[in-house]
Amino acid sequence: SGTNMSSFNLPVMSNPMYGSRMGMTDNSFTLLERTRALERGIPGLYLSCFDMLLTEDATWVVKVSEASQTLAMPMNRMEPREEPEQCPVIDSQEQGLSPGLGGQEEERSLEQVQSMVVGEVLKDIETACKLLNITPDPIEWNTGNVQKWLLWTEHLYKLPHAGKAFQELTGKDLCAMSEEEFRQRSPQCGDTLHAHLDIWKSAAWMKERCSVGDPKTTGWFVGEELWSEADSSSSGQPIHLWQFLRELLLKPHNYGRCIRWLNKEKGIFKIEDSAHVARLWGMRKNRPAMNYDKLSRSIRQYYKKGIIRKPDVSQRLVYQFVHPV
DNA sequence: AAGTAGGAAGCCT
DNA sequence: AGGCTTCCTACTT
Image (cartoon, rainbow, N blue to C red; front, side, top):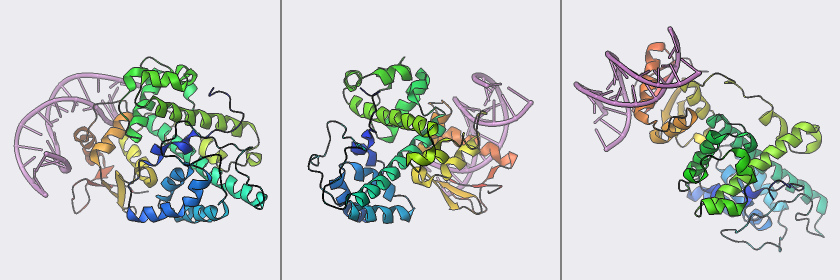
């Protein structure tokens, strides 16, 4: 079924685990309240928005709460549910144009929100691709890529490990599998994995669509810069550890909880979760046995080379780039 | 217990 | 040969 995408499906929106990587704080809970209207309007969507709200980027907050005011239309065909059985669809034709309530304006803000969410999803996918060194389109994956993706998805959403059940499968195989087949291979999280693969498939489909047509007519403001940048730095050559660390540091939204700048100007950073950073590095380099003991040994090699050093006042898990950007 | 430091050897491209 | 990775011992926080 997944190949027929006459309308744009975003199974993401319904997936409760999409919000699972954030920590619930009192502060964020009030933000949650402010997105209630959204939640009612598009079940599941708020989780993604909620996730976005955790960025340091305050403009999201403004946009979302504005949107929630203008988007307060009922969506009676969908009752709110905690753990959706199937993926609701954000359907650009059919979706929620509540009659009587100044349709066009709503349509526009809805599109805005959709764009926003889609953009966020594409960003996440792009990030994962860089990190795992795989292509965005699942159809191109070999068995190794599939395993990486599984590992990544399991890790990101705290799923039980199911890689074994999908061994020897290529991306093509995976894409051809139904949700039922996923569940057969992994009763606990097959449906979740299938949903996530659907997101990637949708994104790849979108990418193709955006690159074919004129980006300006597609309406997805994300189209270009995200995909066509042909990979900023490390095209081809194996990535260096110091580059990898910098990449993580440049994405505080995704990795701020495991590594962050203490002083960006001076290039001083702190590894907040050593095990996590090591796991990410291991994934990137296909080194499942990577740990902080080994990663830190590699960092220490940089002392002699003058790439990274310990800051003047040495602190645990704190390092400094000798040549800050 | 976890992090820091650096020698030594092995692996991979 | 370079850039880790793996393993290890000694030392510090």
